[in-house]
Image (cartoon, rainbow, N blue to C red; front, side):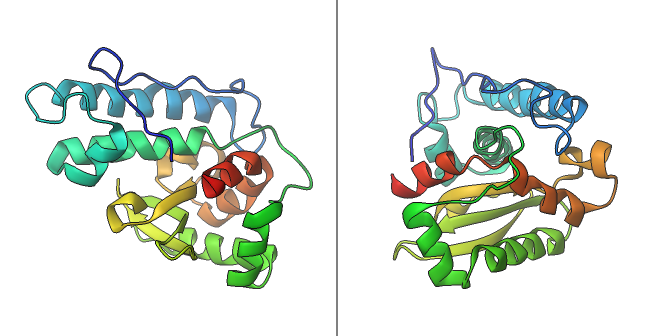
Amino acid sequence: MNKTKPVNGKFELIRLPYGLGALEPVISAETLRFHHGKHLLTYLNNVNAALPGSGFEGMPLEEIVQKADGALLNNAGQLLNHNMYFMQFAPVQADNFPNGPLAAAIDVEYGSFENFKQAFVKAGAGLFGSGWVWLSVDPDGKLVITQESNASNPLQHGLRPLLTMDVWEHAYYLDYQNRRPDHLSAMWQIIDWDIIEGRYNS
């Protein structure tokens, strides 16, 4: 995966490749404004404030997540998770599914794309508390779905992350209240499979 490097000693807030209203009705402009502009910005500022004297100055974000601990790890994990999350979306598409090698791998591992979606949503809905659900690749090239609590990232377990959905309440509560499964089921309409396939093929 491409590594996220600091610029002049600091990480920068990612620019969304779509407008605030582009993901509606799946994610509202209000949710996106708060999620990206406030929650992610807070994690970013916390990481940048913790870097001086940490021994991690100048290190790519992905390596910090693999090697740090404590508050720096928590905020760096959330920064990386959110960066991957926000950069995997595109405006709503009715018929939205992967193609090529990734689609074939999903069929091999889960039997069909529909089976995969059901397994992914079940994992996300069943995660207790706050965290993330991920599709990743293990060292043998096998696809795996994992539940990651709080700020955890599959990189910490030797996996290569491909696709994620945020199941912290701030990601969906304004739009779906406590209906986490509805939120997860709607998200398939906005996944940019070109991005996910790029991560898979890299």
